[in-house]
Length: 406
Image (tube, rainbow, N blue to C red; front, side, top):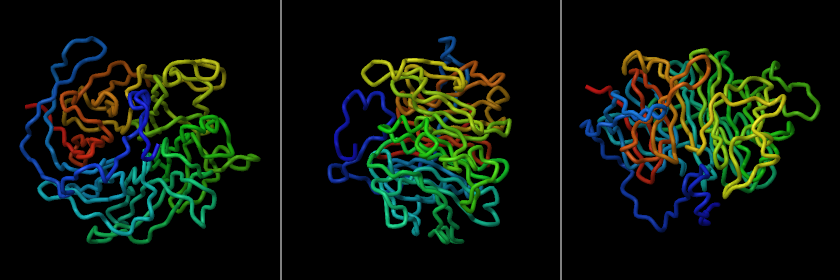
């Protein structure tokens, strides 16, 4: 991809963030205009019944003119870190313009779907000021190889929140590969304090998702210092990379811990077959041996199977693809008891926020929020105030706070 123009088929179906030609665009200042008036009323449409949902939310614009923001993470009750895919990390706070880009980031190989992607804060951030972030890393003297891949790093955010200190690369996806697609790159701190990181299949290396000697199409688990837990499922297995937690994934861009304390994720299918999964240690989630999707333009993938013995079925799948990204369970009751415990997922393709009701581990209802907003939803998180915060992935992206209807 890079600076090349994607075909219209891939633009319509592939979950790529559009490549930006900086010389061809006129940028508005990165200092965002902050808007406090709650100007938009967004009604939710019930997909399963086709009837209007009486629930609605108001949107408050916290920041705008963000350059393809990818992730948001709270550092206190008012301030957030926001990543911008071209390689900026900013502090955002209601009532103030976003900060200048925080210094100290490692070199980021931005382009296509790659760049500075997810960020989370450590569970003990208030005392240690540690953050974790993932990004596309070019091959270098230390990593060897050619091309790029996903990397995960830790750092201490300085007391004035202007720079990163003690930056350490904890993990680098192997092998490097010349490609600008399918980096995965969602980070979850597990209940045991380990880190789970999602890794894409790099698009043209989809068969690697079934191997144990590459990190392509995997979820991995490491400790916060980069070491490998001894109880990882493939530790000691000949030819297997010990970081691997689960295999058979395509491009996981949403991951979170559920109310059950277990990992939940979603991933992009090809043309159809986006999935929600409940990844567990040592399990195989099937890609590309089984899928509910098909090749771009039509035609079966592999043998065209949707199930096979020994391969896990998704908890839910979308056909046609919605291009899911961002994922959080709502724990608060700020929007009423009916929404408490619901799962929220963004759609890049259809530009809405999905509210999913879960019963017995299955999706039983989906409502669509923010359809009138008409922006690609990249991330959704619950804030310390119990409200939902949404990032839109645009050249002039926004950070929105969703407020209950009055």
